[in-house]
Length: 180
Image 1 (cartoon, rainbow, N blue to C red):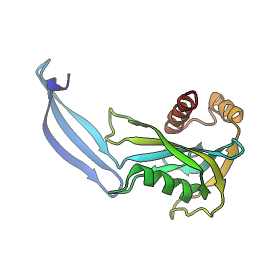
Image 2: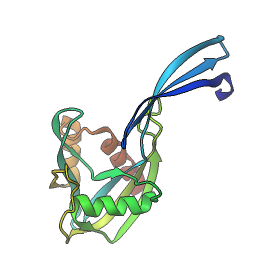
Image 3: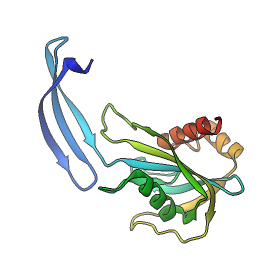
């Protein structure tokens, strides 16, 4: 399938420390036509499904400028340049929640939106978490922690109160891994 697509031109429309927007012109030989596709280049991300020693899920509550709303989601963030996702997951969990854990494992890697975005999101599950340190938030982070049982979290998913897409995918991967 990929053999029918040939990149013939690429220009950077915008670039800053977080995002790079490209206009990529592809020729599609099946119909002998070309078209420009806009793509977004971002660092990879990590997201962590943290579960406390008493079985509660740690959820972060924070303002998100994209929707101009306060949202509930699992902790996570960008993988720094030259940083392994395992290290980033541990760092983000500690920074955003102050939690340490007994065990952490990689559940899977997903593509957040491959139609537009180049990055991957590495999904981790951390078990037996304990909040035993202070949060170490970035300058523009304002995060409150909330704790939910599995039933409470699933009720919030059903109602749409917990609806951040990457967090929902992460929870699905947690469920798949816990059914082994």
